[in-house]
Structure formats: structure tokens, C-alpha cells
Amino acid sequence: MSANTQPASLEERLKRLIALQGPISVASYMAQCLSDPEQGYYTTGTPLGAEGDFTTAPEISQMFGELIGIWFLSAWQQSGSPTPFRLVELGPGRGTLMADMVRAIRSNPQAAEALEIHLVEISPSLSEQQEKTLSSLNLTPIWHPSIDTLPQAPLFLVANEFFDALPIHQWVFHQGKWHERVVGLAKEETGEGKLAFGIGSVRHLATEGSPQEGAIWEQCPIAEAITATLAKHLAHHGGATLVIDYGFDKLAYGDTFQALRSHRYADPLANPGEQDLTAHVNFANLARAARNQLKQANSSQIAISETITQGNFLLAMGLLQRAGRLGANKNPDEQEAIRDAVERLAAPEQMGDLFKVLAFHHRDIQPPGFSQLT
Ligand code: SAH
Image (cartoon, rainbow, N blue to C red):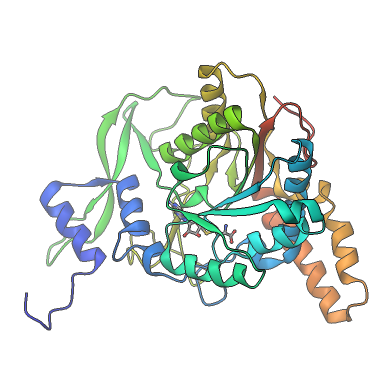
């Protein structure tokens, strides 16, 4: 390679790989686009905020993180206030959720004193932002590349819009059988083929319901493995976990593999590594993975909540009361902005219904927001 040759783009590298080895699974494509060590989206990008590609609930309003902070404060107190109070976040973005949780938790001096922050993050640029955000609150978090290095101790762990970023497999129902959905090269008359979806080898999957020809079924083995590990961790050490994300809690066929670029939906096969790729989270699968793990470990002390909507969760946590207090003595424009944030977070047609919340924790505790446990 001569000195002035541009390094190959991720798209060129993927095309070469596919030309050499054949089509790759959607999971492999997604994993490489998001976390290629040099050109992956989370390795290089500025995903969040107005200049980024998407906005998350904590970036909409401080109320979101404050109410979740209150949830964890309650879970920690009901657990006997284990010290240190290890507050963990998976995929903390810009650190906004953690900062808002901490401000709420610090209303309790004993909890404030006991707090120890752990962050699981793969993005170097977002880790830098997290450090900046949290150092302004005099916090020195401990970073982890994965959940494997988290302390063997009670953990109070939140994951907001983390599981949607993990690679999914897609299966296509074709001629009565499930096949892996793959990314290959389209055959074109001239030049190099574009990246295109195709149908790969047959997989023997247990079929639920009655899928139609062309139906798509998604699975996220990494998300299930993480959930199972967290359930086992809770059974051994105690603590509580809260998972929040967009997704569904019942069997649903359909293609939810999506790309966001500059706050607009885009073609997931365009511009690899330069746009956010996600899929809806299947909460039923996560709860099942946790339940199976607990069964294997013969542990009946851990309760798994029903999956509830973000709207119902936030309202049960006192969103309206919090908004009222926050708006007191503010000018009409600021009050309008608070009302608008409440709508965005909780209204059914906005984030309220699409986003879901799942909790698991020891049976002896009953943190607020949920009624039914299984
Ligand atoms: N929770 C934040 C950010 C959500 S964006 C919020 O609500 O604003 C997804 C986050 O997960 C980013 O911080 C991203 O860098 C991180 N992430 C994505 N894949 C990851 C992985 N495999 N391991 C650890 N962190 C990951």
C-alpha cells in the first residue's frame, strides 16, 4: 500500500470479506458495524444528542433519572443498605442518567456516603464524556469492558437502551423451515455488488404460533446470556436490576432491525459503521433466560417482575408529582418544556407504550413501580 492510499472503509472491508467467505449473518454484520475496533459506530461515533443520531429518555429530562434513582434507593434500603452501595450502569451513554440518579440518591446522606459507581462501556469517546459528566459531581467511577469484571457483591444495576444495541440473529420462514437471514452481495450487471439481505442455511428452531412464508423471527443470544448472568449474580449476591428499552413482551414476528442517522430512519445496510443499528428487545426472551438460569441454579429467592410500560412505570414512580415540583416557580416557557418532557416520556403514542421496564430482585424486597411478581 502506498503512503497516500486511504485505508479501506468498513463497507469495503465487509464486501471483501463476503466476496471471499460468502454471506455473513445479520448478527455478525451488526456486531462489526457497531464495534469494529477501528471503524465501528461505538468506537468512533458521537451517537447521542442533537448533533448525534438519537436521543434517549435521560437526555429528554432529568426527571427520568431522578425517578430511577429513587427506585434504586428504595431497593438498596429494603436490601439492608449493603455498603458500598454499588450502582452499576450498562451502556451509560453520556453519563446523564447516572448523574441524575446520583443527585436523587444523594438526598439520603447514608446512601450518598456509601455510593460506588461502576460503568460497563465499550466506547472510548463515550467513556470520556461519562468521566466529564460525573467528575462535576465529584464521582470517580470504575469502568468495565463487560459485566464479567463487576464485583462479586450486591449490585444495583440499570440498563437503559443498552440491550437494543446488542447484535441479533434474524431467522426467515421459507418453505416451511427457518433459515438464517444473511447479508451478502447483490448481483449487479456492472461493478461491485451492493450489500443485500439474503437467505442462508436452515436452522431447526422450535416454531411458536403459525408463521407465514417470509415471517422474520429475531433472537439476541448475547442479551439472553447477559440477563442469565445477572440473574445468577443476584441469586448469589443480592441487589436489583432494572432493564428499560423499546421492545415487546409477547411473541411477535417481524423485522425490527433498524438504522438511525441524524435522528432519521435509514437503510441498515447503508454506511456501515456510520449509523446507529438496533433492534427491538424481546422482553419475554430476557425474562425466560433469567427464569431458566434461576431454575438451573435451584434458586427461588429471585423475583422477576411482569414487563410493564415505561409510561405506567414512570407514573407509578410519581412523574406527575415530580413535574409539578420541578415546575413550581418556573416561568411559563420552562413549565411548558416540563409538560412536553412528561408527554414524550410517558404518553402512550410517544415513548410511554413502546418502551418497557423489567425488574428482578430478591423476593424479600418490593421496590416501587411494580405490582405483580412471578
Ligand atoms: N444508557 C444511555 C445510552 C444508551 S446508547 C442513555 O440512556 O442515554 C447505548 C450505550 O451502550 C452506549 O453508551 C454504547 O457505547 C454502549 N454499548 C453498546 N454496546 C455495548 C457493549 N457491547 N458493551 C458495553 N457497552 C455497549
